[in-house]
Amino acid sequence: MSQTTPPEGPIKLQLYVLGATTPNSIQAINNLEAIRRAQPPGLLQIEVIDIITNPLKALADGILVTPTLIKVSPAPTIQIIGNLSMTSTVLKALGLSITRDEDG
Image: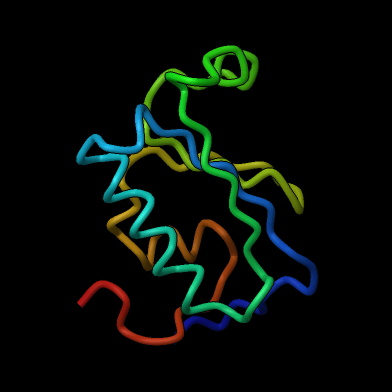
């Protein structure tokens, strides 16, 4: 069990994917949704951005690899690259508590 204190306000996240039907994109979306469901309602605000349909936003945000998760706020901004399958690592990076055995 993590000793991390959850943030009081919402955490704004942006998940950049390459098409919503590629295997890594699907896995990242599903893994992030599972993380959201395990947290208090309203804590995570998630925006999924497909770089095929919105390449200029990805370019402006410096996205070179997908899937990439960006914690926009609260500060500090962080990036997590990959399909988010290592749940405990993602939770720790986001400053969230591990509520159960997420990786097992």
